[in-house]
Length: 247
Image 1: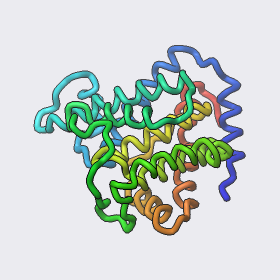
Image 2: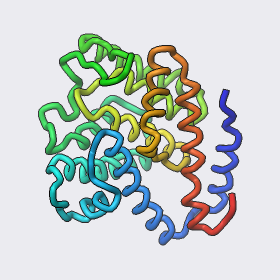
Image 3: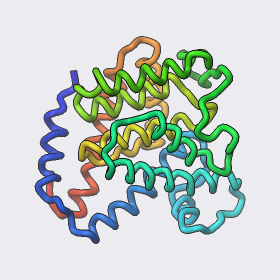
Image 4: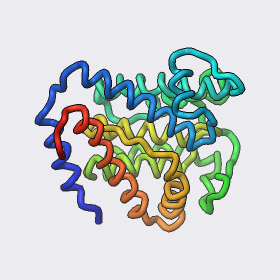
């Protein structure tokens, strides 16, 4: 199994600097929102570059890009803000939270399906795993929440966050936007436990998809957990840089 001691030590070190100076918090937050939005959208095929995403977040339209791509950027930022509000409230994960996050992701893009579980069956392009029949979605999502409240509650926060991501996307409850929603849910869990959110880099997309498929088809979560643990470790780096300390 993965050794979470290293991550716990990094968190303890970061906690020793809290509360962080407001200027550091603001600077890190702006950088995080940009990187998280860019990479999560790019994984799903959004063609805006990092710099173009920054411009779109400032409310400027980028020439030659679709309105959908612009909405994906604005919506994702709103979803991050909503997740941060949920972190402050520190409530357990619920279907209402999941639907609310998804509603923000698809706002002005597909309002008909935003925050609504799919009524049709889907396949995931390039994956061996086939998501459950639409008829089973309600019970599958209830089982997912039950797992979170029972077995999931006893896991290390990083493992729980990774499992929330993997198991949610396995069910694939929405027609579109499952990937973005799952990464927001994962970070919601991490942030509630005081860990920095992880930004899955688009460069790791192939490895990310392959390890998810392994978890879904072989019930082997280890490769996916390893990726998330490694990225969780790198999530501390911006803090060390801003604070001028060596980990």
